[in-house]
Length: 267
Image (cartoon, rainbow, N blue to C red; front, side, top):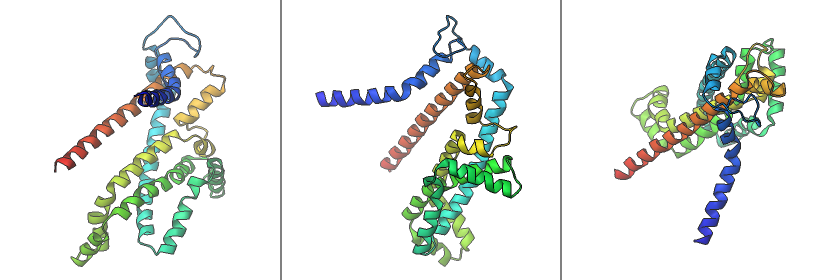
């Protein structure tokens, strides 16, 4: 009993240390203070109104999500095809390609960012939306491969061979047999790619054009002025919305997965 209380208390302490700063930010999003650390007697939703009335922040949010969706889509397509190609290659070729694919994961992100910026400059792209998109695809592509490969290894290879024996072309067998089997891995890779793209700062800073901002670069620039920027209080409301949205996503995903597991057990 004592051991259980101590373990639960330790877990609660760790969670409080992790989430206390975020919860403090949530509280301050309803306080009219212009600076964190100084309480105001006024409370309300004014910062949320200010957030949605700020055209620069709204444009930045739209830019960030569009970039994340486009780069995640490209990464999911390339990563899925790459994983399938690696899986059906010879063992030695698969090991070499797998090692090359994991370089962006192991490599320091600052090195990847500078390399992409230099290559895009040499190819006359410069710092443009194209270079930014390439950077995010390079960042997220390996994680899609890592998500798809385990599903390919779990798949029954006899299904693909049976489809070919029954007259299906390799392309038809790919879309009717392989893709449905590895779809959970593709979806996981897609969601992971979106999360990585939304969170990225270093690659975005080195590859984006001067007229384009993502949430991470906009927030950094706002706080780089000593937190005195007029948009800083509204960013507290934006952070709170993102935090609550992520919690709701995790809860909904957990409920859906639990429901699916119960259905499987019922069968």
